[in-house]
Each structure stands twice: as structure tokens, then as C-alpha cells.
Image 1 (cartoon, chains in turn blue, red):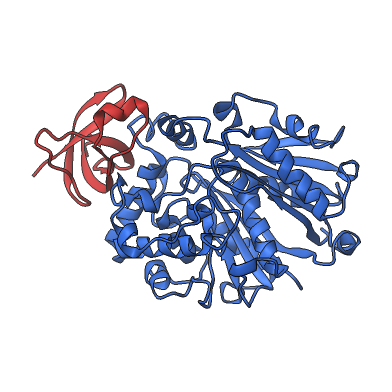
Image 2: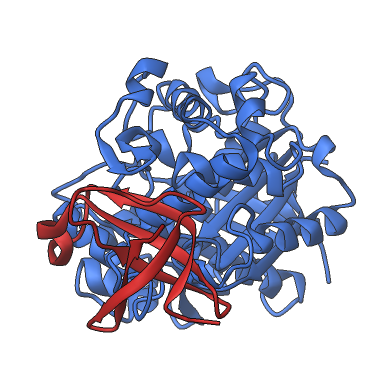
Length: 386
Length: 74
């Protein structure tokens, strides 16, 4: 296996864009990415598309060549990967393996989702398709309710509180307010976050990520050739994908995600680093409790301590372990299939020192964690500027 | 050991649902650890608005379209 680098990034803003269709969003991100890497579409050896539910949200199948040909990428393998909210994290992982193995030299990965063309109850129904439709979903579960049950159990076992959950939302909104591409650039108070409209007890509106349109893209190449394309290459030092049960009821312990532990364990080993070495991270805060558990599963804090770790300010921009300086899914937005690649883009921005007002001083070793469903897929990537 | 009785492992009350469940909100779902082993996700029936909490004992009242409905027992 040979070392791999991210040589280009591109993103659309995230938000509700009534006039934009799925393909135009994906093409905008892909074109920005190719331009960022001074690369022509004809130089792309393979194309991967991360997309969760385009066929249901917008009625289009065969999405990978639908997007890649519109980008001017012709003739090469063009493949869509679906892994719920980890769709483009998984696309990134598979693109990485293609370059690392030597099968491809230059691989373009785009993640996209167009969600706001459907009313909220329909979006809730489509998202529920990432759960076990014959069991938990048939019983009336929504995704918010699955994470609410996780939160309830975490509170019961470890004493996690509503205040801990709210602290995640307040912190991520404070970061997103500084991100010009974020969907909800709004600072919120603890009082607001504690008293939002109930969605699924104990989660309220401020615990839930947004319904979004958007796309993100990255270009990968062998590290030894990266400087032909950019003077700011970022290396993929470690990466792994892991899987687990889809149905929450099948997990022996719902207060931890084994797929996160497995993927991060392998990624740390591959990169030769540990949790204490990571300087910043983009974590999958689909719901506030998910960020708290990720903090624990990634080893940033001991089990049960993710809430206090957040409330104490460790994960703020000025803290010793800044998390979701982009605003996270909570404030930046969560176009499901775009999220995994968007996390990589946001890490790379920090590592290139291009993150503007939200730039953090220590940015040479970063981690991205992308979670699918209630933990059935996880991709963890560790990036470095070494 | 019975698969019709068990203990609440976790629960939630849902206020925002899909169209298919909109008429039922708010409603409670729970993961129940069955006395016979294993866990199942079901609904909680509550005639008088009472709700279950973690470690409460429940009994299955009925299946509706394959979904188990439980209620709290002493």
C-alpha cells in the first residue's frame, strides 16, 4: 500500500436551496474541487459518489454516472456508495483503498444530498429507512427517537444531563456562526438549547441536526505526486471503516458504538498515533448525544465523561481538543450523503490554515468520524500535514 | 421464562413523527429486555397517560400488525 494525500477540496454552502437540484449541487462541489487541485476532469481515473437516498428524495437512480458525466468525467468507473449518513465517508474510504493499492492514481469523491424538496414528515420517513424497517421503525421509531433512547440510557448509566446535551449544541452553533458556508449561522444560549420544542424525549429541536441540501468533494492522489497538484497536500495517515447491527435492539450496549471503537482503533494503529495526539476533530453530531458518545468511543474522554468534558470547554475552539469547528451537522447542516466528505473538507481547511475566523492554532493532526444510522457503519480518518 | 413479560431497557416519548404515526403523537416506544432473553422494540399502551421508565416491569398486551404493545405491571 502506498501513502495517499488529499490534493483538492470543494463544497457548496449547506442550506435549503429550492432552486437547486441534486446534480447541480454535486457538479458545483466537484468543479470547485478539481479547480482547487488544478486538475482537469480528463485526469480523473475513478469517481465515487456518496449518496444516501437520492432515489427517494428526488426520484433519480443511477446517480454516479448521472453526476460524473455532468462533471466531464467520462468512461471511468463511476460508483455510488450508500451507507446511510456514512455514505460519503464510505465513498472516501473506498476511494482511498483504490489509490493506496495502486489501482487508480487520481480519484474524485463527491457526497451529495438534496433533502428539502420533501416535507419534514416525509424526510423523517426516508431517514427512518436507515433503521430496521421490519422492527423498530414499524413500531413507530424515528431516527431522533432512536438517539433519544440512546441518550436516555446514557443518562441512566452515567449521569449525563440535559445540560451536557445542550452544551454540545451551544458550542457547535458558536462555531457554525463563524462558518460562511453553514446553514444556521446563529449563536444560541444554554437556555434556548435546554428548552427547545420536544422532538423525542429527552431530545428537543436543538439536539437535532438540520435538514439540508448540499454537496462536498475531495480529490485523492498518491502522496508522492501530491505536490504536482498543490503546495498544501494533506496526508491520509490512517483510515478504517467498521460495521455493526442496524437495529438498536440487537446491540448489547447502546451507550457505546462498537463500530466507532473498531474503526478508530484501526485508524489510530495505522497512523501510529493515539487519541491524545489528535489536535482537532470533526465528529458526527447528528444528535447531541452522538457527539458525547463519539468523544468517549474515540478515547478523548473516559466512558461516561463525554458530557462533562464538553461542559468544561475542552471541545470548544479555545479548548485543548476543538471539535466541530465547522459547526458540525448541528449548525453547518447535514445533507446526509455529503456529510462524510464535508468533514474531510473542513479538516483540510483547518490544516491548510484556511479556516478564517474559526481557525485553531494547532492543526497538523486531525480526525474525522462519520457515523451511519444508529451506528451500523462508521468511518474514521486521521489526516496530517506531516 | 416468558417472552410476554420483561423490563424496560430504555424508552422515549415521540412528539414528531412520520405521517403514518402523526395521529398517535405523543406516543411512547421502548426497548424491552424480555424475560425469555433478547430485546424487542415495542410501543407502550397507556390508558391514563402514565409512562414507563428504565427498569419498570412490563407485560405484553397484544400485537398490532406484528408490533408488540406493552403496559406497566406492578
